[in-house]
Length: 171
Image (cartoon, rainbow, N blue to C red; front, side):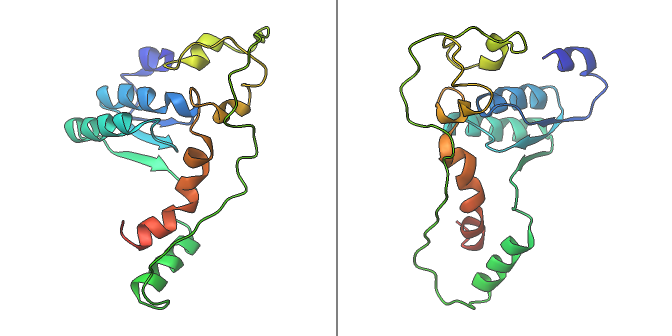
């Protein structure tokens, strides 16, 4: 918000690589200001947010892209070519796997509150999410394991793992 206030008139676009739960609101603000956006995955935290950004992109005419490592890699192109050329026959089933999560997930919210580190603005980090009491288990890394802040293994890894079959099969 500070950057938008101070530099909004002098920038053409933004790169968004904040915590997952803040991507959509920061992206929406940029698009509303007429700024082009490159947002790291996951683009949104919900289907509603995805539809909102789709409509904003159409109404503002800005160029937008979601970052997804590997989407433009040679391996993705090869898988698509093989399937499109019929080199492996008709695909009737796709199975994908990951070693994630490598952080705690699906746990209850911690009951105790820890002292917020001086280097962290917990309110600012929380952004549009429910303001939970700070706990050391959330930050700096494990926030992905709680829905309030992240999207778990699905939002963190599925976009990488499922991208090739999604693109190759034109789903």
